[in-house]
Amino acid sequence: MNMVKTGFISDNFLLHNSFAEELYHTYAANQPIIDYHCHLSPKQMAENHIFENLTQIWIYGDHYKWRAMRTLGINENYITGKASDIEKFEAWAKTVPYTLRNPLYHWTHLELKRYFDIDTMLTSRTAFEIYSEASEKLNSIEFSCQNLIKNMNVEVVCTTENPTDSLEYHQNITKNGFGVKVSTSFRPDKAILIANEGYNAYISELEKVTQIQITTYKSLCDALENRINYFHENGCRLSDHGLNYIPFVEASDTELEVIFEKKMQGKDLTAKDDEKFQTALLVFLGEQYHNRGWVQQFHLGALRNNNSRLLERLGADTGFDSIGDFAQAVTLSKFLDALDKNNKLAKTILYNLNPADNELLASMIGNFNDGLVKGKMQFGSGWWFLDQKEGITKQLNALSNIGLLSCFVGMLTDSRSFLSYPRHEYFRRVLCNLLGEEMKNGELPDDMELVGKMVADICYNNAKEYFEF
Image 1 (cartoon, rainbow, N blue to C red):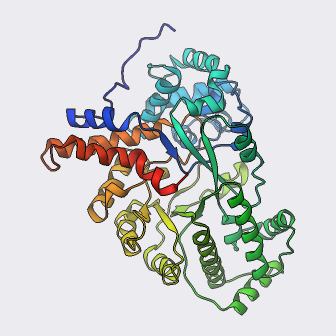
Image 2: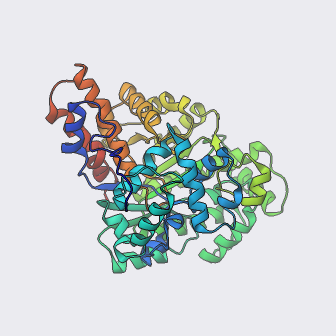
Image 3: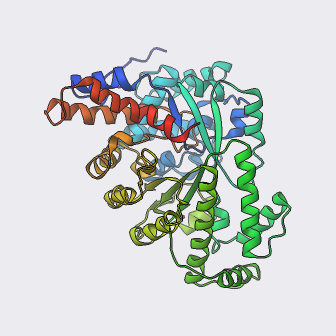
């Protein structure tokens, strides 16, 4: 390639002083990655898939990029439509220079450099050469899905599956192995969100998988417990839930049965019915997780599918979700307390999408740390719209001010992309720069061993201990 290298992503990228540089290079850079929550395809991992070109691995399914392209006025045909892969890549390359100050600009060039050793700015002018070089490399076994993961020093990958998933690909990976532990997390949202369209069809699917006739709320719980046991037998030790907020409206067993029967009969439910049902099922599930020593995760605050016209045309998860402003504190507290008062509160990670909830969650976790487990309650890392420099910094500051940053389990990718592991590097650089600036200013002691240990713990050791993979 004849393109001029720019050195934009330097060795000290995002590191603004010598303290930050030493923290990163000595204590963070070489730590293995525990990616305890992501949406990578276990099928592609099990089959050691090789991507044909850069568009397929980098642009397919990436709604971050799609939103930016639409904002620039790129026609949908070059985003999710029928344009060729090279045409879609050229449309993305045209967009990249306009993403300055958006984290996409950093991520794009970090990924080109770390995976393909391409240290050139992506523009319309450089698009074809970058596409050709990266695609040629991707067409080799050295760039298969498994090797893309191994080459990033990943120790654990934890994907996210629906309760009806067979876990056949996880079983295949466990049988054949590839040097990285691959586990799963149990995500029962489709069973919890009773007001959603398609709920009854999902219950029918759950019936087939469990061979349990689900005609009552009690039998639904039996079916979910059946799948929890199956996931546990296959190495699962985490659950995950993507909810607007956690409701808390108590109901009797009789009320729950009536609500479930109404839904099965196709009758309308009230908002209160929905909250009663969700509350009961979440408490039931929380108790099941505790009984098995799992970690439960709650991703709260996304306002999904805002654009009904394009939802109908393109489907869900295509880039039309945003930050919601749901009330979180009161009902979340009641939910956690309902589990805790019966000593059934599992290790818990809470993630917010609305940055206004940073201090709320940072303070909430302190209510339910009981001294029995280090960092039992976790304020999760910046997620989705918040997994950029400012969002990460605000999360770290809120946790530092109200809790113990030293007990934090660190970053995760929460990604569908096999090229997303530089997000961990990005997080580590932001973390080290934050602490390095405070060391420089005399706000933290000039004790590299002390601060460096905290960095190493946040980047790796705390997660290793917390998840017990």
